Length: 196
Ligand code: AMP
Image (cartoon, rainbow, N blue to C red):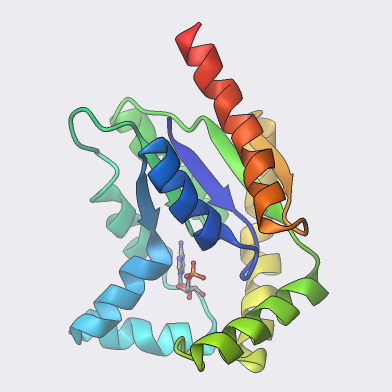
């Protein structure tokens, strides 16, 4: 089973993806984590990425597509993956579709965590307080930019998956356990169908 977890910054994608990873034994492919690791490595590319993240902008499509292309081929016997943070543009969605065809794979579900903008700002502000601002892009100004980039460049990806019948809308405003239950209802339905 291959899944995309989709939604605005602060929607809870990372929290749910980690839980899904351990519960369904899927590989968690988080582009944000991969980029932060590249920054930590101190490489030339990492230094360029650091500036982009601090501005709340998107890393160029070519870099992101190469990054995902190198890990989508999968390992023998693996149960699938959960993509967290990719695709974030329509060009990335098209590129992903080509990569999947090339590797004889497909996406089973796109879980769209829907959360109001006011709630997103509140959540990220709490994360800043709790972590002491460990992430350079967790502050109000950068967050507003990230939300604006999401609306302009990432939201247009939704119709791409709606047209393919893959979009599953989840109420991301609900308490974490309820969001998990809603996701499980979608994913367990898939497992039951696979075992039938
Ligand atoms: P995240 O941890 O998913 O919120 O990602 C943190 C930041 O990494 C984003 O605000 C972007 O600057 C960058 N990023 C992550 N994934 C992508 C992507 N697919 N395309 C472009 N930039 C990305």
